[in-house]
Length: 404
Image (cartoon, rainbow, N blue to C red):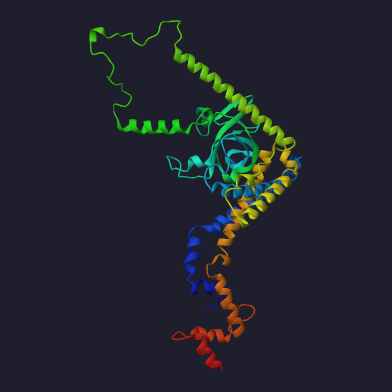
């Protein structure tokens, strides 16, 4: 049977099973479908170039943002490895710029930390112990329209979307790879108004307890009079027109919460304005990590932060950074480039380079070419065919003895 050397190696090196598994998973069909979709997206993107006035450099801006996001994640992961809030980098009240286009529709959106990553280290219901996330209140874009599901949530819960000062805000869990940069400014904020994880966990625990307790919610008899004749059926009722102290405190608390929301929203809008004009100041992460590393790591961390500062400066030079519809253009490019990376990954999986023993195969093939068993076109020569027929001992030694 005539076959290429690559075809032979897939069998002789026990890689045929791997290739068969790739075929059974329909990877070739996915690759063809992805390639076709990618071509369509590229064509649509080229045809819509006239509608991107002021955002002609959106592709270059996207790759610049990816560099900043990668550098920021690397630095934050390092300083958070020492525990705590990373030397105050992600403490409560810290102002961040967040980019999460496909997940939340955010690009360089200002946000304020409500819960540091250190507080999520213990696994809980719905949380698998991921310490690489922080809960933030995020200013949504001006073009944002909330969904019905988000508006049904209450303030203080995750994924809540509210409105204040004619702008929408949301309470999101932000991953480290979604933090574009950490600013040097902080804002005093009552995080319990916007996100109260303790009460949320307690309410979930009470709900689970109620499922197994048929008397859950029933009042205790302790403190109640056993004299039925003296029991007052109107006990606890208030006279008409009188205001109780509880309702007054609730009203006062609600008024304070509204004031807190308006104050935070005003601050976020101001931060957005500063970033669109001169750029918000970046926190010097070297100061946050000065007590946790020594020796060569000091220089390496400093060089990494210098590169991130340079990347941020380059990112802010693009016109797209200041475009009013940046989120829409950025999302189109991110979808296109994400698909391109997946197509590239599938091509690699279906190529010879994905074989675990392919480097070893290249070395053996070079040896066979030197000895004359395979020619420069990877075609099996006469000596190679003779060696293939030797099954009881070393084929190369016997072949060399025969041709000697």
